Length: 389
Image (tube, rainbow, N blue to C red):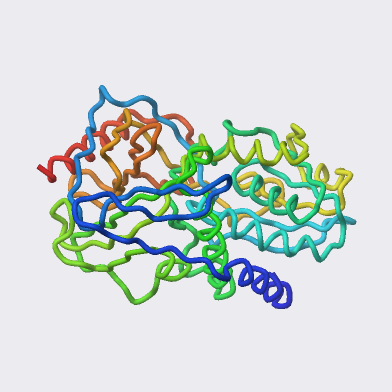
């Protein structure tokens, strides 16, 4: 992104943030409300105080309902948000968001739409129907564009449907390859996106709600840099506290938003088509296929497909495997940490089930679930639950 266009997009983002805020209001041993204005009315999102006790996750093989695998579109220098020429076409690249696609979606959508506005045309083609494509299409649509989404697959058959989707942009870049301008863009996109997501909590139509989240460590945690977007985006944040939950030596804790992709993406599809958006099932093989589109303004949100379509060798898969347990109404928290004998583990509560995760395997294209991974995660999370008793 050139400097002029980035500053214009930044101004647009700053305008959208004005007057928005969220802060928790705790009360002892009772559920608390974090109020927001979701589409369609006001709803209270209930969440326990950060320091409240936790009920254990019931992690056992007989409670596993399904196991799925997704390939995160990980780009070593970080996500690509850039306007380029493709023959007579103007293309905005908006891909490579790694494990932060859902989290960043509304932010990068707004920044991409600002770049498209410079083209001065009404009709826009969006390539890809994952959360980045849908959010970008909706943002363009709301700005007055006529939008058609072209994709090989649509929800529920997208990579976004198998995302963990807790709000916290992660697995975004390799530190030695990311530029300062990309880090600035990620901060701005995170700020826009978080405040947009607040508008959907706790509306069951969209499947977005508050949880409390814990990052766990046996060693002291680095606090020299803020979280992506700034620490103010993580209400109630405490960092590198001693004597953490589950017997860990240190922890970070904060409130954040849980997004259920199965519910959320269906809602975005309804919003887009209900406002007159068009869907076209197309499999693009080469950039020549993109050039053949009728629209001259194009936003490329093809995720991992951009590696082949636009010869981006910096884009690789980061494999993630998730298992789901039967839901528990008494789980309002998530956690992530490396556990001795079990490796990386994370869990998030959804209304549809408890998500168990713990894998980020770069350059691994295998979409087949691995039984040893299921066993590791189920046993690891059972061991974590035992620490609460």
